Length: 98
Image 1 (spheres, rainbow, N blue to C red):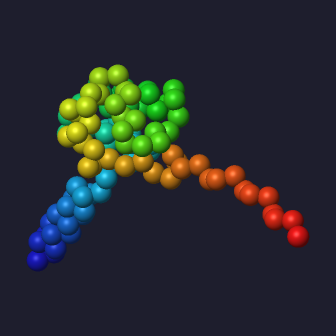
Image 2: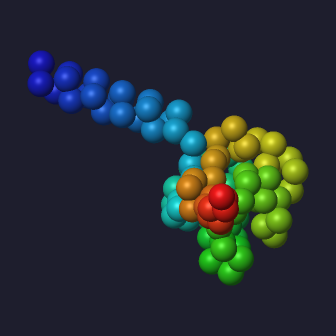
């Protein structure tokens, strides 16, 4: 009985992970390799691009990575996201004078 519970829990966790979008600003190369059309070389290219140019501002920015064309992006765009690291806070507005 315990083994069935553990197996069920593991299956549920894997299902939930499959539905979660991969944050291209924080994902490791190994996590990026779980995406369709992304192997070791493209995952490394994404990490290298991010290290050199800073966080991605949108998922479409992936097409700027060498080796990632529109077709590859089309296959994975629903499975990737950009996290809060790409969002810069707006500058504070000065207080209105009375």
